[in-house]
Image 1 (spheres, rainbow, N blue to C red):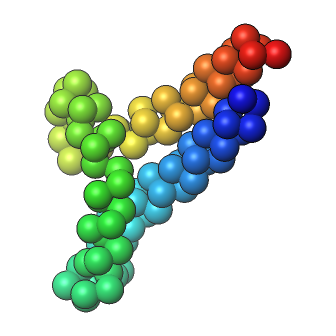
Image 2 (cartoon, helix red, strand yellow):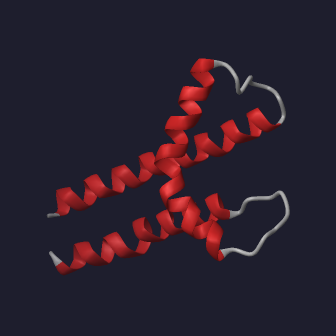
Length: 96
């Protein structure tokens, strides 16, 4: 069971990197550093959105409108770190 919890922790680590990549790519597209009409860029962007949007959309619905700033990735990263630091160790203690 501990191996499964460790694997879940690795998946959460991977997901945090995907969230950060999505945020950085959105900034690069917004400032015109990369061309959003390039097919390769578009396919990467669609892949990142397909992975991150199912968890970001409910957070965006809960947060008030902050203008052009999106704080939902910050809250999602905090939730991922909370699960890794609090939930998984306590579940591991139950199975020890």
